[in-house]
Length: 187
Image (cartoon, rainbow, N blue to C red; front, side):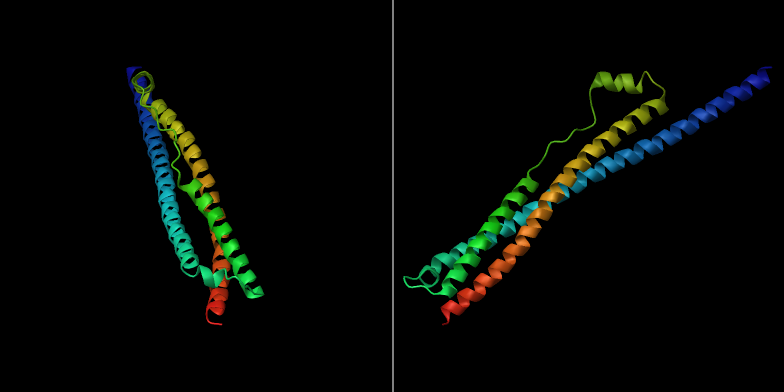
């Protein structure tokens, strides 16, 4: 009888160890996913910062060109070529400012939830429950938090994509402006 009881206890112990190993795998996976999501969000914010810097440089260069050659671009007597140059300059500046707004929104750091570090919760979670239940519960929490970070990431990607679209059209307007400016300058 005790031999049979020992076998059942050993089997239960073996199953519990298997549950713990599985729970540790789930926990490690979810924790890694959360860390990857946070890292991806930070990298996207860094990329947005670089695009923002580039836009500032391009806008500054354009303003310097306009300031330095103001009389050539905005003469007292103008031609249809000047009007086209003004239109392309206006389109470029408008699209650049729209891009600037989108990328500025994307580079703003957003707060996101972190796993709880409340001592009472940790005690209840890890000391009063079985280990595999604790690990599975915390893995679920990491999964929930990862979903929230991923949603922030999706929102920021949308902003960066809108900025890129606006920059594309702005770049074409800038090329047209430069061509028209050179035509005016060397006429």
